[in-house]
Image 1: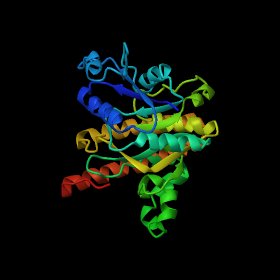
Image 2: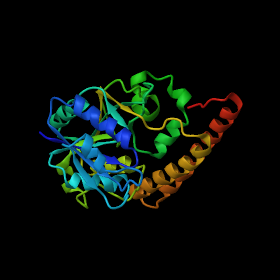
Image 3: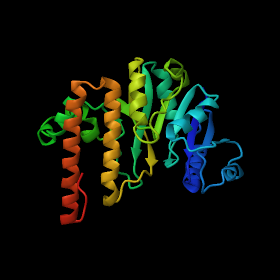
Image 4: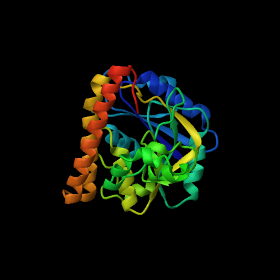
Length: 294
C-alpha cells in the first residue's frame, strides 16, 4: 500500500515546507510519496523545495489552474493506489496518514475519507457535512428547537452545526483540506479525473457528490486530528464578498444536481434569504458588541 500525498503550493513557501516536514516526521506505518505541484507561484522559487526536500517529486505547472487542476496534475504522476489531497496549510502532529489509510482499505464502500481538522487554537472545523437541500435549510432555521433533541440525534440531523467531531460517521462530503480516496475511483468518473469546473472552493463538495453517484460514501474519521491553519478570521470587509462567492458555488452545485427545476429555484430563494439575513445580523452584532457571533 503506497499513499501518494498531493500538495499544491501557491506563494506559501514556508507554510508548505512546514506541511511537508510534518508529513515526513509523522508518517511511519505506511509508505508514502510526496508530490508537490507548484501552481506557477510568482513569489516562490519552486526549486528551493528540492534543496530542503530532495526526495519529493516536484512538478512546476506553467499556469495557476486552480486547486482542482493542480491536484489532477499531481495525481497523474502518482504511483500510489491511495491518494491523499493535503492542503499546504495543514500540519500533522501524529501519524494521521497511516491511521486514515488503514481505515480506508478496510471499507470498500468509502469514497472520500476525511479526518478531524482543528484551527491552530484547537477549535473544531466542521468538516463532516451534509449535502444542501430544502429540508436541511429549513432545519437550519430551527436550530434553537433542535437543541431539545439528544446530542446524537441532532448532530446527525445537522452535522454542519451540532456535530462535535467526537465519533466516526458516514456523511455526505468531507473537506478537501485532507481528503483520501482510492486512485481507481477516478477511472469511474466521466473524465477519469477530478472535476475541474471550480477554480477554488466547492470542489470537495462536488467531488464527494460525484463519488456518491458512483455508489461510494464519504466518511469522517475522528481517531486522528490534523491542524488546518485556514483563515478563521476573515476581515468583515471581505466577508460579504466571500459569502456571495460561496452562495454562487452552492447554487452551481445544486443546479448540477437538480437542474434548473422548481426545486432549484425554491432552494435558491431559501438559501439566499437565510444566509444574507444571517450575514447582516452578524455584522450588526459585530458593530454593537465588537465580536463575531456564529
